[in-house]
Length: 257
Image (cartoon, rainbow, N blue to C red; front, side, top):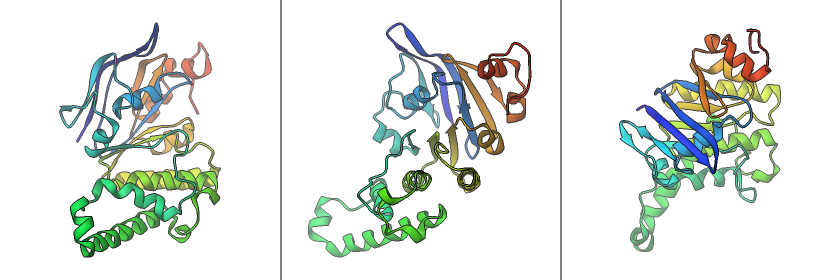
């Protein structure tokens, strides 16, 4: 399944957060969206996931338009996102945080919950096992009974990633997942993102850490002032003079580290 953004513009009054942006995100790959602060990256994520309606243009998923759908409907179609700030439930355990995200996969309705408790218990047990497997995949199985509030910021980001994975996304959008992490945590995160992709889930990433981006991306898209100024393999984008100017304000071409 591929994601297509077609001529999308978003205006807030007289300000264009996005201006005629078009790109595609291919399945089974890591695609990164980068750009200076205020370039329009989070606005693009908001449009894709239903948190913002485009002023013009459309978003298509597997050939079908999804612009204007509510975020929950977008998630049901397999597009799941995380946010810049952690959105875990601090008063719940790590395991309970992940289990709350399994509602998209639940099959027990109100009638069954009232009159078929055995089936409810079986589904709850299966969801617990699923949640434990997801926590193991992100390296948090041993901390499953701890309150999320007691975790380091980096581990809270991993809980948030586990919550996203619990919905079994076909495309996982990560908004600055390495923010606040140590170098060691970023290295572990990069390896985890590659594993997620290798297991068949596409990853679309907004990230400011260029070492993370250039180390794991198959393709990089660059926004500046709401316009797409470059796209291609990481090494090619890294050498693009317009990209260098956007980040460094330099007239001369160079390499973006």
